[in-house]
Length: 397
Image (cartoon, rainbow, N blue to C red; front, side, top):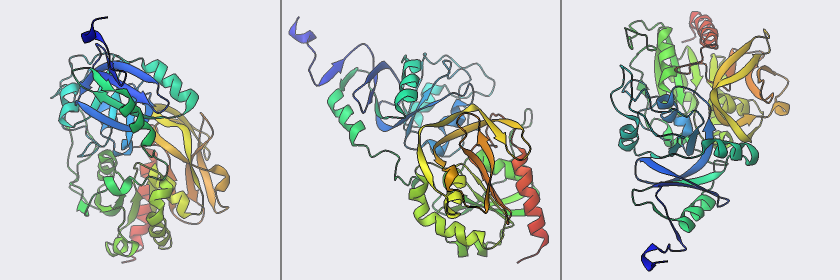
């Protein structure tokens, strides 16, 4: 072999310009897309067929590298309207096939250009089926994704990055992604064809949304119900929240370990529970509510991520197809007697919803607000607003 063709034992040279290295030294080769750089996080998979822009911009994916199981990603491009957050917190993305040119009337930018703009490292041409099977067998691993046009990578360094990364256990990411100061939501409603995002001009009820990593579509749903929504930092004290005179309190979705965020959030939520103001939680908000009610949470092997997860409503026995994105769960056996389990996953029987028996307080693990869908669980917003209406009539302030 010619000396110039020899490969340094510390490096991997290939026609590929992207690589994923897992903590167990498993290597996946591909073609780099998006931002040229390196990122380390937990590698998970998402089974959704649509909504890649909403998924990538969901703050709940902070600290994670998303493996998309659906092969055709990027065919509708990206736009300015479908962001779930102003800042993208996702560490990296993995696709099976090359990104195609977009064909959609709402598209303003190609996905590859959008990834570069938001500094998201990506890789395509990778065997996503094999990676998904690996995650299903072994659990969500720590991994490092790297992309450069020279296709030369220091595998030892990348492997060490994966091994040394602490993982999501014990990691409070809510304090990183939360708003730094309270703000009034601008009032846009959910998107409608021909109309886009209409603005809510009526403000009948005041909702205080505690931001652990809130998605914009949740705020839009509250606007649909003529609510004034004030978004506050996740560490804002209960006394300061009560001073804002809420008709209802919302505990948002978000990333990281609920037990870590719970070190300050539990005390706040427990004080809010005592006020009897209606409380509704989604995803991380659901887990934090459970912790505040003396239940426990734990890390899942795979987590639930996709838009096709069946959930059974235990109150009316109906089955809902839901959108999910979580790597932790509430431990069913730890639920106290005054808490009722209202929903369960038909994949693994895990807790998908709870309610406090003697107060207007409930939560779900999944995402009823999910955009672009499914839309089976919108009734939960109606349920919460009905509780808010009753509370508003009491004129407690």
